[in-house]
Length: 211
Image (tube, rainbow, N blue to C red; front, side, top):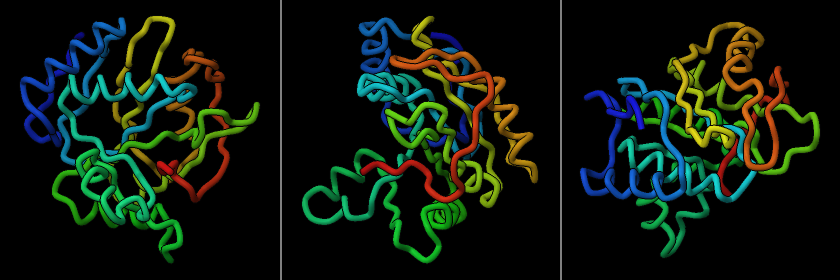
């Protein structure tokens, strides 16, 4: 692995032992991390392509080995009853899709209220999108409204590398921002599909919550 050390401002979880476990897991799977998460208190990170359940183990290996704390979106109903403590331990961020502010509004509020928070989103929204389907744009709206950057992460099955990209600022032009993201992701081959040269846009509301 290279350049995986976190800066002092980046949200963290775990310690030396969990990082050892993460590095061991990545080594056993034959994967490595390329690049590093930025030394920032808050940002939105997106991961693609997401086309296999195996991606979960790669993501967990990346989180454990780097020590970064990433909150994944999940339905608020998952926190009811005995599952609640488990969801919190897994850093699931509860969102209510029925909220008047919607998923985007709830995530923006959470980012604004926190001193440190990283929100992780799968922009494709599903492991099996229809051919030609674009990305949901909730992650872009969250980043723009909260005033935080987007950190793209690619799961490259050809080189077996989790590639962490440079921060992308959410500007007034969604088209220009998506062009930058397209340049980073163009041709990345996942477990079951390859991302196109240009990432199409699909919707404006949902942000890819765990169900």
